[in-house]
Amino acid sequence: MRPYREAIVLAGGFGTRLAHVVTDVCKPMAPVAGRPFLRFIMDQLAAADFDRAVVADGYRREQIEDFFGSAYRGIAVEYSPEDTPLLTGGAVKRALGRCRADWVFVLNGDTWLDVDFAAMEAAACDAPEGVSAVIAVKRMCDFERYGTVDVNAAGSLTAFHEKRPCEEGLINAGVYLLRRDALNNMPEKFSLESDYFERVVAAGALRAVECSGGFIDIGVPEDYGLAQTMLAPLARSWKLAMFDRDGTINVDTGHLHEPEKLELIPSTVDIMRGYSDDPDYKVVVVTNQAGIAKGLYTEADMRRLHRCMEDELEKLGVRVDAWYFCPHHPDYTGPCECRKPAPGMLLAAMRDFDAESAECVMYGDQPSDTLAASDASVEFRLVDNIRKNQPDKRSA
Image 1 (cartoon, one colour):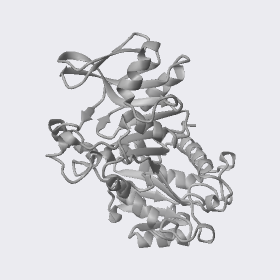
Image 2 (image 1 turned 90 degrees about the vertical axis):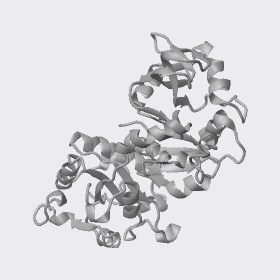
Image 3 (image 1 turned 60 degrees about the vertical axis):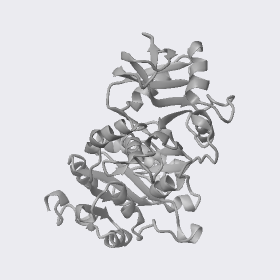
Image 4 (image 1 turned 45 degrees about the vertical axis):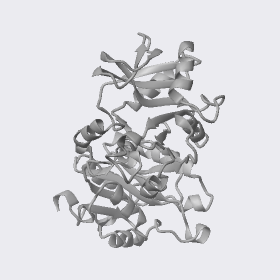
């Protein structure tokens, strides 16, 4: 089963150096290729199957919170606001208090790196006792904007060097994997880089993983301009194949939350596989989970089941790109906009993937699925009739 993944995203900066270029939004929400820059980072987390993101925001934080809300592409989103600047270390320490995983990723909200999260997790797993962080590093040529780092043959980061003109070298690329308790003894306000990393490096507490993919830091106007073209290929819209869960993907056993009771429905798996193989489609699940409201199981139980389902579906050639769920029930939590037959989950999925309703389809087995699709202006397919009467939407 894939690991439970959490990330902290540092998004509290003022963007002083961009102030004359971006005047009306906080730096992480600066428009790049027609969308907020922070969205590229959140898309990256979603593609890597992160379960939860804690956004450490501050300046104009309402712009971030209004845009992403409490969930994005199936990632649970929480916020750790700074009323007064805490510097990078203080912001991370406060956000770590909201995390559950033993190791937590940290990303800078003004930097995009094509990072191998699994390689960083493997480095943490293999690290000796006393290692508290894994740092992604990037090899650069002809630069003077960044300081450099030294990494030995065993993968330990051994030294930090000040900024200077450099023909070639490794830089700290701004993505970290931290032990959740690593900063427990640090003060409330400090720099993660200079006050923590540079203090513990001599003790061998830092490992490094070199990343060879793309890298861009929008902190200065010239690189902000480069980001417009570099990230443009990632700013695309998608078609969506949306599936109800219980009774559609799996046999409905009543408030399913135990992986050992999972039984997939082969005919639906066949349909999902077709969409997974189509490069223009994303496959998402939209499911009412009233058992959470009723206290029959927790959100963590549900996410554990979904990770199990992902593993089983992947073996059958199916990729699930996002899970949308409603944890409410009107008798227990009052009315909401996400529980089907309301269209909230479908609308959220279309927003997150920039999908037009005319290019989406919804598969389900209940009248509530039909009504949700209708209210979202999305074509509906009843699973009982998929095989006999209704062609795959991609060829319709």
